[in-house]
Length: 440
Image (cartoon, rainbow, N blue to C red; front, side, top):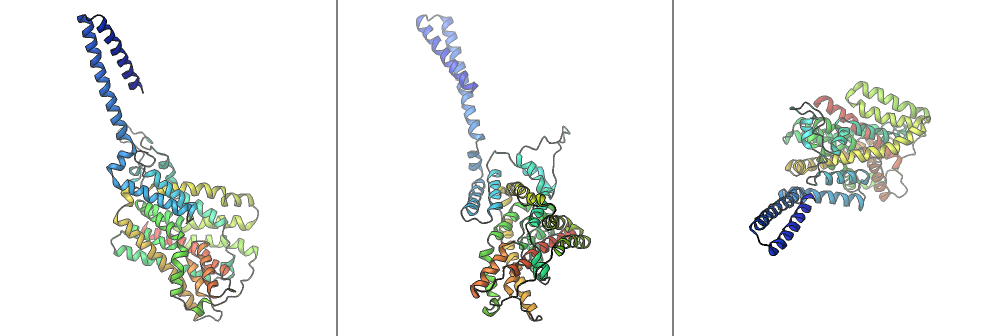
């Protein structure tokens, strides 16, 4: 603006001198007029350079320089469409998509990949010895909650406070179905390793099969943070597509007669049992597998708040305010890691393919184990509830209910399916702990 004003002042001066020259064309006046004209030319050059700098610093030049940026912006808009219009996991898919949009806007400077190279945070300038001078964006700070494993654990507190473990306590056999659904995680780990991924990367890819977004983010942030963007998008995309992916697998692995099996109503679980369960599970799992303690401990803490009945205000806070705030921070931070350089490559395509393979294998393993259990049990289990062993709570349980009612309208499988469903949450956290213990 100052240069534009300067340019205008020079033009006025030139005009005034022109009038003077016309009135009295002395040599001195002619010399002054020539000098003013030269200054005007210099000012014109400065203005041109300013305009060029403005164009070069705009985001449009960044899009022209790298076509991948435009592709990422289109992908983020597609994800926003799925979240808003199709309502596919909107609570997390929307902030993830918008975080992807922000990080790929050229020149916005909200997230800097180089600050987290190799999974470590680089904050110290080697020349000055000063810290924090390289942290230039909002998301750089928000991402620390992901990098340090804070957000997934806080999410698990909220999940625990919203989960009823009553169906699992009433039917302990459903714990086996939740465990069987984790088969896809370890099978995909072996497949990813065979495809050339490092063991840490293969473990992070395999965890997608658990259909548990926070667990996938937690494990990936520890083992392969460079893959966080594609793995998070894959995990939440497949969670949203549970009603599309699971039914064909469930029907292919079961007969019509099996899908029509009616199950008896579950027994009533006492309040004492519901209070003891989270305490006992925390102690047992944490002693056997300490690396799973952060996730399991937070999950059970939230559930204990809900069931004990003496901290209702805290329970409501973690279910609502805390859960909502952390979800926003987590989604934006994870989306910001999906930069064009990290996302648009053959590796990402491989992750997407392996992720859906893991999810399908987990679904199928739960159904098959239920069929095997029926061979040795007098009280038959409807195999459809085995598909709910993936930890997409409560969507997977609702899919079991829907498919079951299509075959037998009087059959109500929802509460029976909730047993494997909540055990799947525990199972995926345990699987993550195992992978972290061996690969971390």
